[in-house]
Image (cartoon, rainbow, N blue to C red; front, top):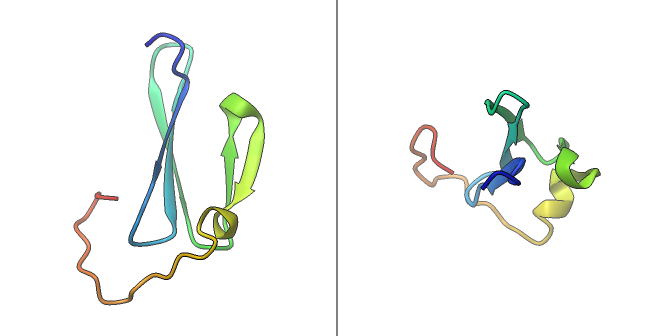
Length: 71
């Protein structure tokens, strides 16, 4: 899809969002945002959201096994 400029992956096991942005040379750049106090900037829709708002009413468990690089 040529019109796709931004792809967002939201983690289920920790407060973390991966934002992939397409640059003019068709190169994808990753911005990794983590922690409930962090802010996410979505350039494609000119919007900024705090992770604590994205994860409102979500409770994380501490002892879940985490595979590296998986959301």
